[in-house]
Length: 363
Image (tube, rainbow, N blue to C red; front, side, top):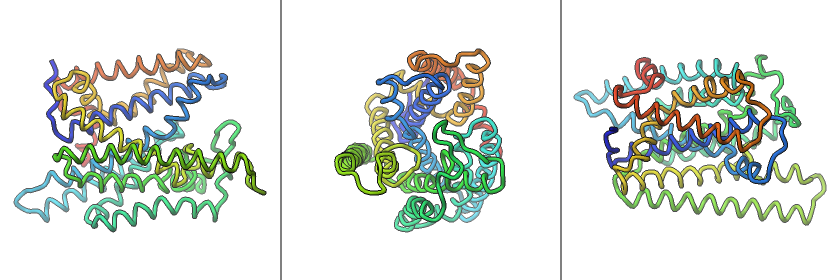
């Protein structure tokens, strides 16, 4: 039997990671298995609701993890411990960047490269004040619309098929990583920096998780209302040079392009999930569903790669394509259920997942 989840902040974050993994698995299975099939009203709404939100939660949790790494110090030589952490961040950043480029050959929506670049910046950023983190994080977010003014965002995209062209060229690799990829350094590193700040909160205080969840609900609902209101205004009062497609790109809540209003909605959803997960673990520390989800979340890196290589690779080899969204979603839940079962069994014998072990050995 799994040991109960301790009512501490780490367990709640692990549950949130598992929920983020579940969201990514659901979206990716539906997109791949139902490619070319007509969307149904319920599934189209689900894909819109999840568009980029699980990834944003995952990125913010990665930032929280950076802060928690720094909190493991306290040895006799704080300076040496700090230098050791810097080396660890550099090594992990380089490793994730390399893994991301390998993953990119298989999955164009790779997010590991963003993690890699972000971790390479962390030895400097983690020492900064909350104000500096806020300015730098906002800079990454606001730099994206500034780049859109300078460079054509649509240049490499075929929006009819959601295909990115010229990826494996020098300019394409740089643009895709930093600017116009599915997940790019500008602006997504800003969310990871926000996670670093979020990890500095005293999550042992019960009111912190409630406030985070409340702020998340407010941000998610408020940004949705602003988006819906602006789209309604431009729909009823179209402006010259601003057709419905352009208005949706500027004021909608879709992940491409990732403009500030969309990211604000993502942050709100992530805060709601993280705060609720921490509260749930605090109130039901021995609940089996939470212990199972926490075990899965502790293997999040492993399951991120496994659902792309084994999960999606498996359905492609089996020919489970051009199926309904309902069957794709059932398959996704089946894969996640398998992941939870394996994680529970794995945690009985090992402290870390396979890829988590590799990452710890590297740094």
